[in-house]
Every structure is written in structure tokens, then in C-alpha cells.
Image (cartoon, rainbow, N blue to C red; front, side):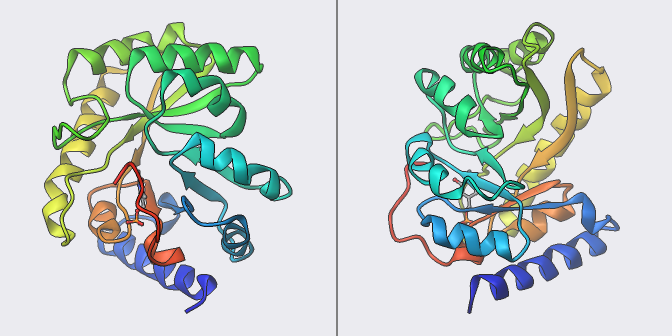
Length: 238
Ligand SMILES: *Cc1c(COP(=O)(O)O)cnc(C)c1O
């Protein structure tokens, strides 16, 4: 199957899941997770109409970015753990950082974005499963609170919502309670109407569980394997 065919099938499944949940399919963004795949395949996905791409490493994307510069409508999201010392590079390369997991990182990204004269959209990554090996702030933690309260003094960041990677399971259904937990956390934060914190976005769901994520309110599903096929190289994040 070609990438275009894979995308058409994933799109159909996204739309069906949205309808099942009584949601407008247009309220769910399909992000193509292109990590480990070379620029020509990213180009194919763009030609098939996708505009939002996810990469998990600064280093890898900096190698590809040059080859993809002509895809002017593409949005490049960083979805993997970012070390503070790579914040400036990330702010230069990416349209958005969906994996902010500490106040220190948020501060570094804010200064980097300020120097570039831009406003950087960010999501806060939440470790809903409390797994030691995963990045993300704990739900209802002091760290999350600190990040949320810092938003109004980090004017070069645009806080837009939450992102999560739930504990791995082969089946989709076990992820449901984690997706629901993230949505409920988002709703609690939104209800507080904190200054400079937008809380619409919920980035959750991957190839094997995106339909369940959509049923639980996802606004962005991050799909790699179901679009590009299996990754050959293991990645650090998963
Ligand atoms: C790799 C990755 C994905 C995509 O995973 P697939 O199972 O290939 O769809 C989604 N989110 C994050 C954070 C990733 O690192």
C-alpha cells in the first residue's frame, strides 16, 4: 500500500471515530509522525494533503529540514523529549513544541522564541501513567501547577493544551482511562481560566489507539506506523 492509500484509510477511520463520538471530524487533526523516515516519504504525505508533521528528535529533524523547506504549508511539531540545551535549536526548527515537561524547559523556549521574535505554540506533556521511564509532568503535580502559573510571564510561548503517551499496550482499549484522565485534567484546568493558558488542544492517540483517543476527545492524533509503515530503527521515546 502506498502512503497516499494509508492516509486515505487512516482518514476514514478518523472520520468514523469522530462521528461515532458525535464530534465534527474537522475537530481532529491528523498529524503524520515522520520520525526515522526520510524526507522523500514526508513529501509524499504532504502531496497526499497532510500538513502537520511530528518529529521526536531535534538532531534528526535538523538533517531533514533543509530538504523540506519548500513545503511551505507544513507545520513541524516536536513531540519527543527536549533537553533544555537544545531549546534554541528547537525554537528555530519547529513550528510548535508539543512536549514541554518542565518549567526550566519552558523558560528556555520562551527566551529562544523571544530572540527569534516569534511566538511558539506549546503543549504540556503529562505522564498520565506515572511511568518512571516516560517524560511528562505528573497530573495535579506541583510541577504542572508551576508551569501553568508561569504562562503569563512567558509571553513568547502560546500554551494551547496537553499531550500524553499512555502506558504501552498492544490493544487500544486499555488506553481509554488514560485518555479520559487527560481530558478531565484539561477540563479542570480550562475551568480555572488561568491567564495566558489556552486549553483546547488534547494531543493523544497513536496508530494502534487513535480511534479510542478520538472517542475520548482527542483534537490531534499522532500517527506514524499506520501511515509510513513499521519503523526499522528503534527510537528513544518508545
Ligand atoms: C513515534 C510516536 C508516535 C507515533 O507512533 P505510531 O505507533 O507509529 O503511530 C506518536 N507519538 C509520539 C510521542 C511518538 O514518539
